[in-house]
Structure formats: structure tokens, C-alpha cells
Length: 334
Image (spheres, rainbow, N blue to C red):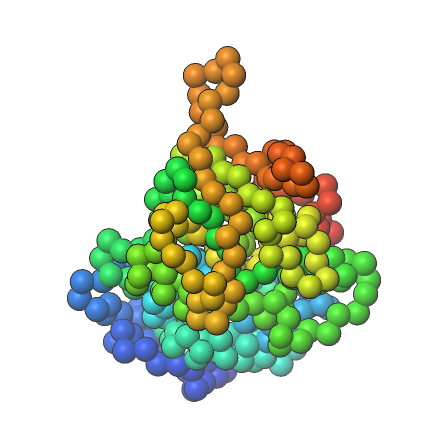
């Protein structure tokens, strides 16, 4: 196992990105950040737990480091932010080979450089299983960050890229099939859509946005709940990734694409920052339940012959039992 002091020195000497907003990074008790005048500071945090979010026998250390930061950057992308710095706290088992944390850091740093995110601090500790907590800070012009709560009735619903690729790889891993952890794999090395998020925010095209980390069915329900709306999507319009299927595209999760709404009169390009954009449905006013005074954010999906059916939220939801037909790492801990 790599000694804590030596590991911290490795981090300090690494050739990670430098961001001008970081006045003081690693080396003191606190980092000092200075966002641009007229900008709000954005903060997100994510836990990455061994045997919940990854397995050592399936996921290379560099992939885990990349994925750890990608999750936080995807949250920033969903609000149209400009990433500034990240903070990493690592809990590592005493018997872990010294090469593992080094390769983890290499994967994280490679992604950080591509978005000019500075690793500005963190902590290390002994732990029974690998635990990585990432905090990402970003900035956006004051009052301009994109929220989940701004969608209006009649808005069009869009997604970036295609869906189901990560879940399809995970499904093969559960079936005992060998999967090469390619750098092109959306499961092992997801690409957060930071550039798309900023483009949409800068042009004021988006009324609400969220990243697709838990699955389309769950994340669309979040927008509907926060915006007090219902929605209808069309099955034939869902952009399904190669080798995936509709079930994985709707409920698989960990695509880290963006789901957003836009006013119906606005022209949304078919590609943004090189990423395909697909219209999949529209929003409606909340529906009132029969014999009830309460409104609900129901989501429906149109299938063949315009047949309408409810779309249940079957994606990943923490602290709930896994839904039938949706695989995730917590279903079978090793």
C-alpha cells in the first residue's frame, strides 16, 4: 500500500490542470477560490463506493478515477456551469496495491485536464473498502444557472447523445461475459456534457435541465416534479445506443447525457458541440387524479399505433429495492 504522505506528495507533484480561480490549492489547511465578479459559485458532491458503483475485478483503477470526477462534472453540466476545481477524499484498504491509487489519480487527472479543473485539496484515510468522495466547484453568471424547476406546459423535451450504452455493458458483465474496458466505452469512461450545458445556458434555450445519471424514467420524473408538470414521450423517438434496448434506454442509468426542456417556438439545433440532440416528447399541466384534490406528475409513453401507457420510474433510486429487470452493482455485492 502507498503511504499516505507519499501519495499526497504524488498528488501535489502531478501535472494536473491549473485554474485561475484557485488562488491557493494543496498545501494549506484550506484552499482559496476566487470566482469571477458577477458569478455564482456552484457546488456538487458525489460518493463512489466499491461494490456499489464499481468492482475492482471489472473496472480498472483509471476508469474508476475518471468515473468519479465525471459524475460531479455531469451535475455541473446539467446546470450550465463552468468547472473550476475539485476536492477528493479517498478511503483505501491497507492491502491495496500501491499501483491502484496512482492509476486512479491518473484517470481522474486526465479528465480534469480536459475541462481545466484543478484538484485543489481533499483527504485520505484507511477504509475497509475503497471509498471516493468528490466535490466539484463551478461558476455561472449570477442568477443564470439552469434548474429543474423552470419547465412550462407545452415545452419540448430533448436528450443529448443516445441512451442505454452503460447499462448494456453492465448487463454483459453480470452475465459473466468478458468486456474490454475501452476508452471509447460510455460505461468505463463517460463523457460529461459540460460544453453542451454551457452552450444551452449561454443562448437561453433551456427552461429546465438534468443529467441522466439515474435513468430517463427517474430523471424525467424529477423535472416533472420540480416543475409541477406531466409529460409524454414517444417510444420511437428515444435514441437507443447500439446493442442496447428500449428498457435499458429508459431505465438503465449512468448515461450522463443531458435531458432538457425548451419552449416550443425555439429552434434547437440537431447537434451541439458535436453531440446529437433528439426531441423525444413534450410537457403538460399536472393531471388531477379522479376523486382527489391532488395533482400528480404523471409520465406516459406512446408506443406503436399511438398506444399510450404509463412510464414508471424504474431506474436507480438509492435506499429502495432494485426494480425488476434493472441491474445495478448493489444487487450483488462481492
